[in-house]
Length: 243
Image (cartoon, rainbow, N blue to C red; front, side, top):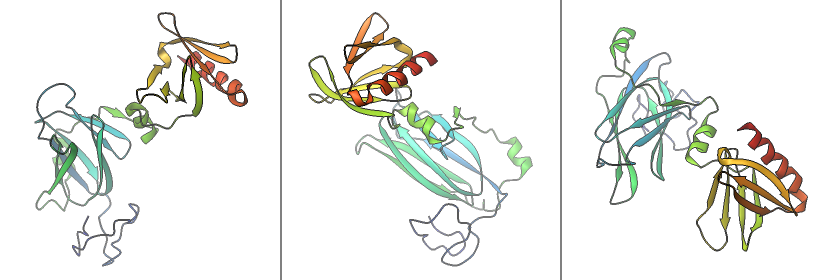
């Protein structure tokens, strides 16, 4: 990012809460002004699972399909955009002191998400209320009141409440217990077994193990260390009771 006043490159570790340029001392942006950011999804083929997910400031979630775009009105200041396609993601922080067009696409050759930023000329004065009212803005697909945690859970990137070495049948591995699911990963393979709480009918004690009964009368039995057994059992029982 460059200072809009002196044009010099801002330090990489610059706090997004700062409003003055540490190089020239001028204000980086004028509070109260609004700008338009258009995000265009390009460089992808039509088909399944090609939607680009866009997370704005860890609060708003948008979806944009190939060859389509979304239009967002933003207050002047720093904003963080996270672009996601399948398991790939890219995060950029942008100083909004003018309107922008952001081209985002999944590069099938490099396997990475790439973005290209284009500042809209003569847009530094912002957009007035009358013009803004005539703009067709894109409503977010989801709004998170809990910040990034909600989106991390949605993407399966949240931290587990418990991470325990267990045995399941003849397999040893790691049991990770999340707020929405259970994951068991055997040492012998990378493939993990995922159980969503809404698929679980009950949790029972079974000779020093925990028996997770799933729909279809499917039993998943995990041996749990004694020092944490009762705590884990109580946690899972409460979680199943919530669903």
